[in-house]
Length: 438
Image (tube, rainbow, N blue to C red; front, side, top):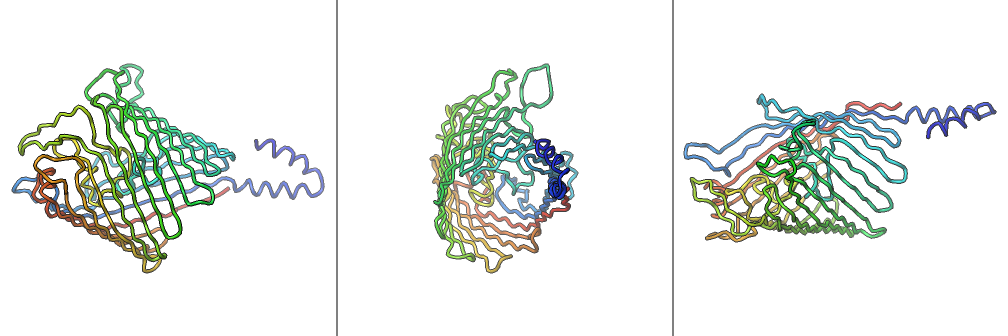
């Protein structure tokens, strides 16, 4: 393509004045390539109290500092992008041997007409990140080895995603997958988004198929397929913002059980000005029927003919369901899930540009019926503050308190679930270290 442009210019350079145009074009081409090195470093100290089963002599007060460092290199020119990012994560003072890994390694080819193809290790973030998200709060950011092709233009976005995972390059021994970067053996997804012209309405549709290797089955043909289909809608008139989602899961899980699960959410936000914002919403995630908690001292599992507990799969769970991450980030006794209801209200205040405060309240309850127990799990209050020291450096801190119910105690097998506390302080540094163009 470049030769078709440069050849005529070389010919025209024989005429008066054409050399100036050629020099001008050469100057533009000399800065067509861009290379950047950037850093993203998180250090977070935490203090936790309560919430885990313990023996009488155990102290469930925990204090530690965790860190995550991403060092990335990006290359960009017209029609081509590439990025490689190394990641280190761990706990201060630890000698963890698997702390280093490759977070990103992808190349993207695009055309001026809006079509593109991106292949390699990459993060997948869509809509509000409830189903696909980078999970940036976690100390090991989430990525996928995948091929993504699509089109973006004129208000339309269409992405097709495909992935096939294997533990080793093995020409003998079949295709049994033990799990690696992600637990699935194969993934196919289609995401479509449309922004209505001259109207603050956006709509997304998502379909996903996930192939999971059968648990404990070494038969390389035994892969169970589970599907998810749903939508995410946003409406943003002046001073208001509304969002709603619905997703349905079906197919089979890795044990071969049928899946029949769903979730729905709605959120409204009002911003009278740049300093204030108030919000409220409700999440419902279906749960397994006949959920039972085995007696203390046993490890019995409840048997189910279907899986009715919704799984958020590869989303950024921390920003939903309460900041303390007691739900959908940790398992329940018995191995199944009673689902979740999350009713919340909150607000943010920005007294000036660099400073922001957030305060929220959550009422949490299970979705299914638990024998001899009420559905309420507890009340959670969380607050946080963020100060931007400079454009690429910020410090934030937060405190959360949850008053658990008898149901919470029963599910987690700890009386300390009546008084749950969590405090943290975090330093975030994300500068561009080096940029050059040629």
